[in-house]
Image 1 (cartoon, rainbow, N blue to C red):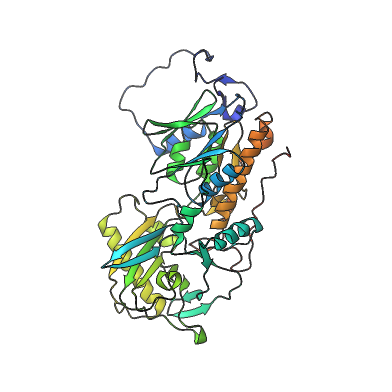
Image 2 (spheres, rainbow, N blue to C red; image 1 turned 60 degrees about the horizontal axis):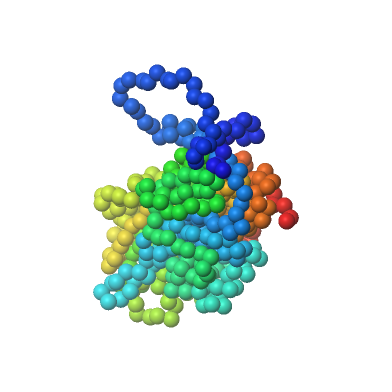
Length: 469
């Protein structure tokens, strides 16, 4: 039986058939409209209005005994979701656009620098654990040698070189040899999980009780449920014609910051101010510098035993600077890239208290714009699930902006979907979650939240609407 379509505002009202298969009923058509003449027009605003007034897909087919889920997005949240689904006996296929690997913001870039490898964590710099569920995962990663504690000195750096160390109030974790390795190892070796990359899912289509996925009209299988594990304009575009207006509306409420990353390698160590007996810092949250919010020494962080090697630094701009200098991240103009590089290097000088132009010239630089870097608002729910459309959303933005939040969101949605499957979809309304919550401002650094770093502990609750089965 094909999926049913309901107007979003009348979800409990009149049912209209979708016409997804042979013999399906169709609502009677009204009189033909008079076609407008002239040049057709299109605007982003009209597209948004149209997406808000989609008809709601409602699946009425029974849940099969061996359901499968498509997870669109291979960042921390999508990987955690697929892993948790497999643990519950549900097959999952992860679709990701990554050319070099999985992980999203758990990204590491390795560059050949005249025979010497230059290694940069160019998104997530480190993470913390404040929730017992996430800590158990981290403990497993520690046992496998995938992560270790980062005990290097970090703190706050005011313009002019005034550094204030942060007490080691909670363990800080980093991926061994970089964050990418952790991302690559997050999925267990299991026949229950398949990864398809690089793949850019461009269309979702309900058909005969299943979701069909396409990449530029190329089919990528049929699934009993779908998970949207990414955000930004690509997710908005994918959802805008999906038949999931409630998910579309929540995703479009999300506001995202833009942050520039500058990767720079230096022949000699930077003149870092030493703090008493603590020595030189390895990472600093920068204050009162417009173009800079973070600077981290990847070489000291990742390879503390190495000496006499070039220093690889990751610098991040402030969100305000990113917003003012935002361009299409897929095609950054050379003049913009050069301006951002010079602005951020001047910001380094200002932060360190150096005179303008005195910073040594880097031997390697690369700028990257994270156009959809971090969430600025959140609904404060662990996951979103539309049981009528058998579709959900997971991601750190649902509760904050940290790796912990991303992983817990993926786990929560996976368990929610698995419980829904166990119910055979017979009580769908009991499984609706996060479809109508308002979004509130997210607090934290321009590069994200680090629960426990300041003794704050954001609560990431399990979905409370899941019945006991």
